[in-house]
Length: 144
Image (tube, rainbow, N blue to C red):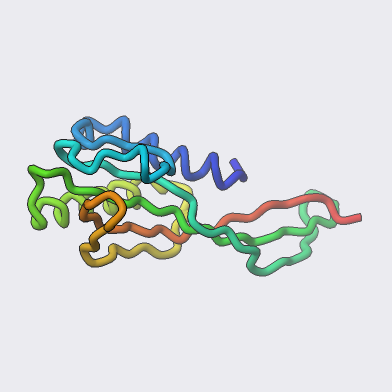
């Protein structure tokens, strides 16, 4: 697996399939006009915010010169609280989601994670916390 989309999908699908998170509604990146913040419960909006090239290297693997490109990407979950969710419940759910994604990362792609303070989004009149996972991955191709 070397596509950032495959890595992100694998992490999120592992969490989604857990019975611990059956009450959480997961959405891929959305248009704010389509989002209904009055949804009861918790909604996690998943997106790849930034992807940037890091270091490069050349190595001798399998008798061929190969070049490896190291990339960093931010996988974000904007976790929205519905009308019936308290700030404490939102915080607890964010911690549980963060721990679940870290546990799902059996290949060690995540190098750093953090949870933002509670924020207000004026366009949707909703409160949310943002969980960010910094993912490091390598794309390889044969050197010419």
